[in-house]
Image (cartoon, rainbow, N blue to C red; front, side, top):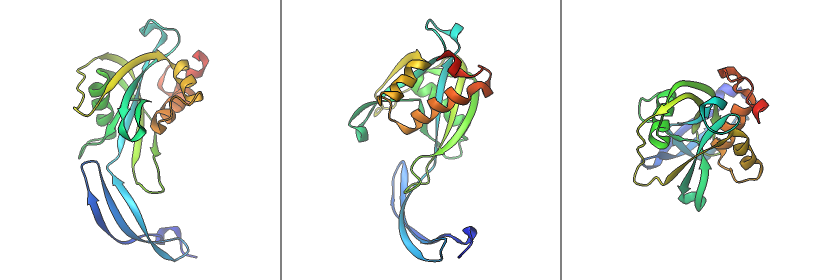
Amino acid sequence: MMSEEDAGRVAGRSVYRGRVFEVNLDRVRFPDGSEGELELIRHSGASAVLPLFAPDEWEGTGVGVILLKQYRYAADGYIWEVPAGKLDAGETPEACARRELEEEAGLKARDLHFLTTILTTPGFTDEKIHLFVARGLDEGDMRHEGSEFIECHRMPLRRALELIGSGEISDGKTVCTLLYAAVFEDLAGFGPLLRDV
């Protein structure tokens, strides 16, 4: 049996390079020493950010959030999402989160807190999404691209969690960001958010 360090890419070639990702056909050595070919989508990574409002920062009750209702062709319609986007060349995950928050939700954050990093679909892509929460929100300049059709919705965190439970929120990064924030966000100073849900 080989060691884990000996497993990995032996050779490979790019078969497609687009604006968002690259498709490689890689020759891979597996942990048992055998080899095979795998298709892999290479992606620069992304950041996703959940805008949070303390109970005294908005007209609702409990902690509030902003979610986007965004048209996604691959999903056959509109889906609920947190603001998110691909890292530009040389951009840090935090800078990306701040940029996407302003471009998609029209908000600037005085406090941006890192939650975790997730692998989106490790069976065929190396894409990682870095998850953040944003607090201390001020108005910024919303700038949607021509292919972006986005509506911003403010709602109680508990309502967003209900939308996960009902299956209305099915986007993976959004489910992860909301649940992670609801369970662990006491690390960023609100106290456990679930007490307000």
